[in-house]
Image (cartoon, rainbow, N blue to C red):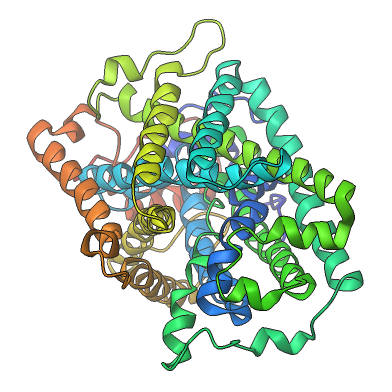
Length: 514
């Protein structure tokens, strides 16, 4: 599939935006590869695999690696749906404007509200998992006090870097991408080729994790290992107006993010399993932080320390990017007056040109959640992570559902990236996968503590309930008159414009609908 424009029937970027009702006011300096790097760093296979390797192994044993393939295939279907949507709507914001243009303002507001909270909780989870590597780097014990302190440290350092401006963000993101490639692909291949201590058949050995029950339930319980990994590709569309030829390039960047991220994750996850000196101890749950020991056994003291520096860099880069993304989404909501304290949240620093107050919120709330995790029962971070992933899946599937609804009403995506007749089938399969994934994420655990077992659904219920209450009492959707629910109309305009022999300089946007 080519990422370059065709020579005929092609709308210029500015003309495409004019059909959507916007002016082309951003510098389109981002290339296909830069857009891919953004999505890859956000997806962060290094962070995803290292965060939940021990949990996945203790829950599902070595066969839990197959969740990377299962979830990767499902999310690839979602990326195809997103690709068609962003190809018709190459505009800033991602989930929020896509849901708005496919369905309506209130629907989009709820999708974005859930997504904001999921991102904030994800920031907490990534910083918490990164604290383990930071503790290993400095030889500190993995106690709850140390974990909490280092989690807060990572959050505050990321905030300080974000305060300095976009240039720092871009620089750290590039460094983070290099760290990802070294830490995932290079180390994973080295472990697979030179440090293998187990046969490849171990990937089919449950090692007794199911006890006296069925292994199916143990395997389903390990799904979080894959589900936590494959998101972030939607970030490629968040910056659509800063990408040259976004209607063609962003769908390709999204698919590349899934494919390269999935292969990288397989190398890393498989390498750790095969190189583990005491795999039975990890599967039994007696080693809650096994990766440093694996690396020390395979790379030696110096090599392990170097890798820990690389891993901490990747975690810091991921926290930095998540904070930045969450703050921009908060700012965009606040700028339209669609969130409480919107005037304070919409302030931008005149010196660094970043939304400083929104950044403060994107750091302070994760600090509070970290405190709750510290004061709560052991293992609470896993449920917190599951809530974050569930919220993100809810936001993703809101776009998939809205896309299917429009297709059934007669919408034929009019962007240059199109699945044609296969689009409906792919859309249905993507929705079915998403429902399956959300059921797995929401399914209660069986620790014996009612609140702890149901915390994922309780958290989602509180967030959704608060959002609905604010939506219907404050009616923030009335603060914006941007177009909504216009997918069919815009598709007709785009096709007419491409077929016109002498296209006009602008087009009227489709009317806003609810």
